[in-house]
Length: 116
Picture 1 (cartoon, helix red, strand yellow):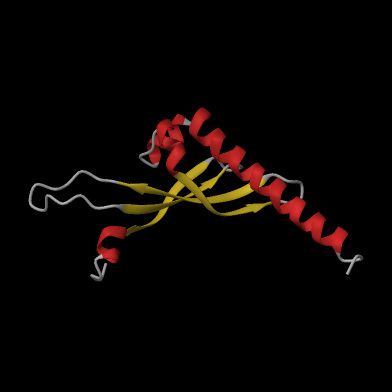
Picture 2 (cartoon, one colour):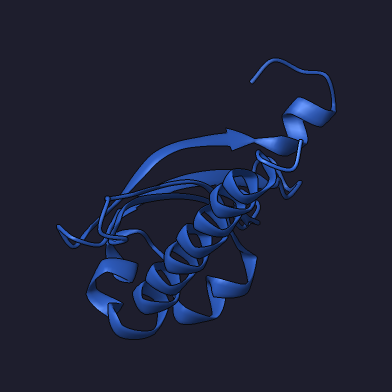
């Protein structure tokens, strides 16, 4: 049991450091990359609502990819005045400098039991 403990601590510490690097990459996106934010219809004040879902790091610790989600509240349409919550999934590649919307899901309709 004690022989496995250092290896488990090393894995936990590596995961913790990788997550910190992914958070730093996301912070860098929201503070220093306004052109990418505009491509994803984001603004710097959206950072507080962004949640990291997945990330990949290279062997040297550089972040390769960050998949994050943000809940949006789009304006209601005049014909359907109810406002919906929409989860948007975005993928940021810091090394390539790209940001792409990879999916979205209407949470309000899912909660109501209706098919999305």
